[in-house]
Length: 380
Image (cartoon, rainbow, N blue to C red; front, top):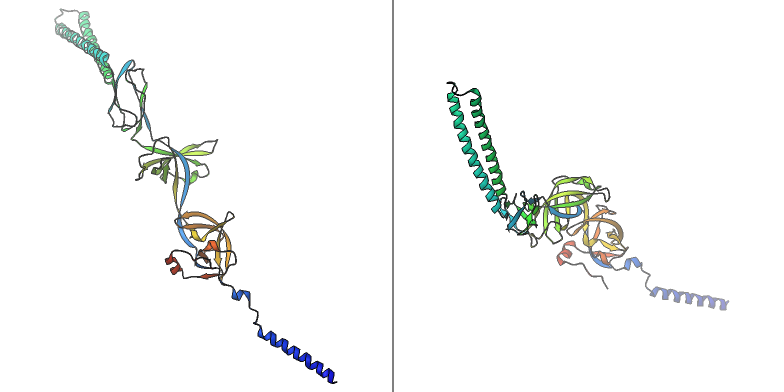
């Protein structure tokens, strides 16, 4: 009995010692309760905004209209060429002249023939008048009187023929000077001093009024979105920017590439390269189709990983969830969200690039952080 009592007392002493040792250790803590925020961030919510809707297209700049200037008289020698390619000319301005000595001689001959015919007509008219005065006396027969009257009419017809010939020769003489049919820019010159040109030979080509147009190529599926009067902004290959307005839409679609031509009247916008646009130059542009409502977020809140776009949504426990979204157009510093995010979501605005799904964050005062102009750095 004394030995058993002594053994129980020893076990009790060991148990008390173990309890005392356990009591000296600190209690285990919840890891979530002691986690530290990974980053200090600011938050925002998506905003509804009106974004411009555009249709991009490519095409070429071309002359609005080109006038072909040629010669109407054959066999004349070019005596002088007064303009060069690129010159701006006015309507009626002399572009070139032909040697006119031969035509001047022909004009003089025609005038002499006219004077002869007029003299013969005057003599015939006098004879006819005397015949009329003698018709009542019976001195002349009816046959003779008719001869004098016929001679008068014949002489008058010859005068008219001589007048027509003189006018024709005068017109040919006027054609020895080639004049501009309209205001414009000389785009091509084929006239050469000393060359003898044939009838109808082309001497110059003129871009009428100096006007250009943009011939945009638009797919048949997008053609219905355009109407005459739609505005556009065009950028030429030289860097020149032009403002355009749809004049007309081509009536046919190319069956090979399914593209239709849209004809856009253009005018240069102010800038260093304003006058560098040329016909035949490649140009790209955007048609303005109006504005449509869209859900937008700051560009800084969108993170691109593995080819996909993500935003970080803030949960009530200050942890973030990575949300995959589909983005659309860019408007300034904001980006359109097509799908994947609700309008009432609260997302990380700055510092999203440093976060991972499930990270704990500290939310800073948006105004203070915006005034600082930068996101906080990750804590070490």
